[in-house]
Image (cartoon, rainbow, N blue to C red; front, top):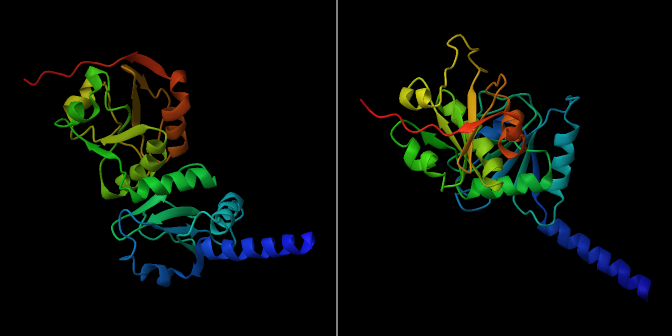
Length: 261
């Protein structure tokens, strides 16, 4: 009798798991481009898109994560798998890649390929988290750098601000905000006063798609500056610097704001 109960409980759990786990759909490129995203509104579950080509030899971690999340009884959102090399909506990335989709945004997931990190980033996405758009006018107000960063720890990226670059940094913000680090982007060519304040200069002959950038972390009234060459697409290095690697880089006092002449 006990064995029968165990079998019945197993079958019941299996049925519940099938009912609660994410709804996985394998789609073609034209299907995903024509998908109706109106039901995925901010504040509700977003859709997950895994772009994993079948002939990819370095995609085992992405495939493993897709299998885990699609069978997760605690995740009930829609999951799409695109077997293609093309990455729609994101010009700067190539497959394999994971995207969060809703009716307003298409943002890449750039965190560790682990279910818990992905779920945490999904929560940040659904609540509208994004990178701060910083400039000379709002930098001090938003970061409160010279007053002790009472708004929290800030990773500041000095790079060109375009719709394409903001997609990348918005993707980074999902992982970093889950770890209580704010991320802001400032264009040093446009906001020259703040760039000079932090002694930031970006080479003018940088590669167009993956140029050199600069990064600083403002943490507990101290500034840490990334001390090695850093490129826009080095998001793993950026994340590591912001979370754990900053003690290995240049440490100094946060410079006071420059007076306007």
